[in-house]
Length: 223
Image (cartoon, rainbow, N blue to C red; front, top):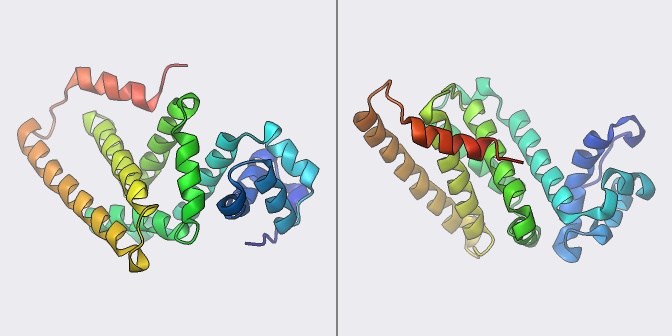
């Protein structure tokens, strides 16, 4: 995907995100490495030395994080709160996750390689934080304003659903990724049923402090 951007006007943070989709496209063939970075810079018309400055050391996880950020931003642009507000909550979440799947529909191998990078032990905490961040963005776009126990459970569950759906996605050879979308629908159905049962069990205003503190550590991992 060729960028029509004046890279000289971008900050390094903005440049990383701007280059990320092209890096992902190159990662299909080259993996998340300097070769993909150089190919992406050339494809986008960005000075290679500047691109390398944006990704010092050409670290794979830095590239993957920039790519996830680019998907987050594209999702926010495509599905602002006012557009989602016309849908039921179940459809809001389904639409947001479906958008993310469609955004990577033709770069399965890049997704597979990105998941492998994220699964490396040294990247585990950072990957958890990124998954939480994307889930948080989705819930906020969906209109969620919870600040109690529900804030944490919703994000933890959605991050788990999205991660599991991606694992199905990269191995799905069905037409139009039909099996992946069917899997997503089943997971969302399960969550909606769980939310109803949880509401009945806990009551509207009840919290579980110990679990809330534990989930809080997922949101803000210790350094």
